Image (tube, rainbow, N blue to C red):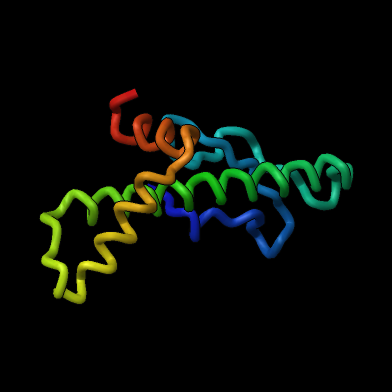
Length: 111
């Protein structure tokens, strides 16, 4: 599975621009890359923005899934130093927006 930190815009020494999208909650490059030299700057800028949106969405679902994993563990006692991390995970999971939850459900096959 491609992680958000692995979603790179270009390859071949910056000659080609990848066209990332989200399929079943995962980042994918289904369309042919754009040649940086032959692509209109407006199209290139729009694709860079779309790629950034994919990166942001995948990073959000990764954080949500990590929070769910920690929040799903047994609640640590109040005096345990791990309690703060657990409480933070519970808060992150509770604050997730509907788009992030939908991506998680798609990734887990529950959608």
